[in-house]
Amino acid sequence: MTVNTSTNLNGLAWGTCGSIATGGANGISRDYTMVVCPDVVDFGGAAAWGNLPGSMSWYLSQYASAPIVQVHEVVSFDFSIFITNVSKMIGIDLC
Image 1 (tube, rainbow, N blue to C red):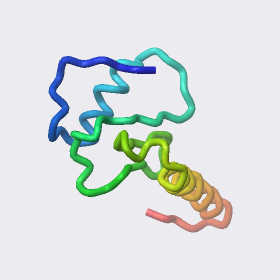
Image 2: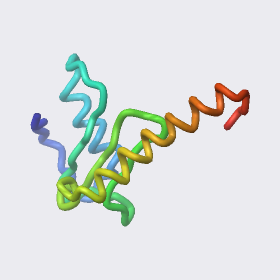
Image 3: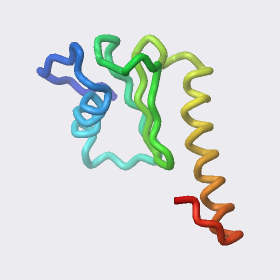
């Protein structure tokens, strides 16, 4: 889905780009959200960001179709959930 905005995204932080995108997707049920931001958005030198644990990742447009970048973000997310679940099963607190 494409979310249109009149906000100038040039130099805007990646998290703000994500907030605009998810705001435009309110009411849509989803398990995982991949936000693709224009290349003018500030990613602090990174190609993408993902929350841990979480169900959302943010990508610069030029890297959004790169499998290695997608795998890095999704595997990090899944691995974090795995580690959290295992730690709960064996009684370790991973603050």
